[in-house]
Length: 125
View 1 (cartoon, rainbow, N blue to C red):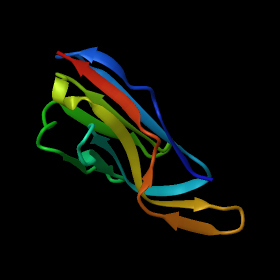
View 2: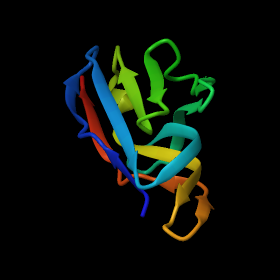
View 3: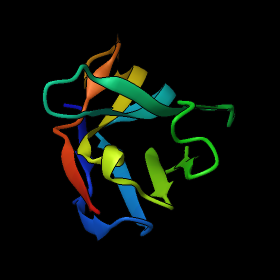
View 4: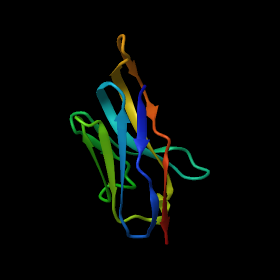
């Protein structure tokens, strides 16, 4: 009943920019934290950036100053603006939502740590 759908990633040149967006659908009442994680081939999934419902943000050191996360609580969307992209930013990017409260039709339910399907971002050198 809840889905996270990411926009398409893409192929960009080093130094370029790309914007990812993610929309949560369903009868959602609230989402505590939304964020982006990424996983490169052969590596563990890592945090990129998160944002709380109050607007507090957290970034991985590797993206500070280059990436910016934002969200629209009314629309249950989160976006990641990526600039000055580097080849090492190449990865599959995943949208994440933590503590989603939604209406099931017969009651409220909360779920933790919900993931989108991922979208590939490739940065060429």
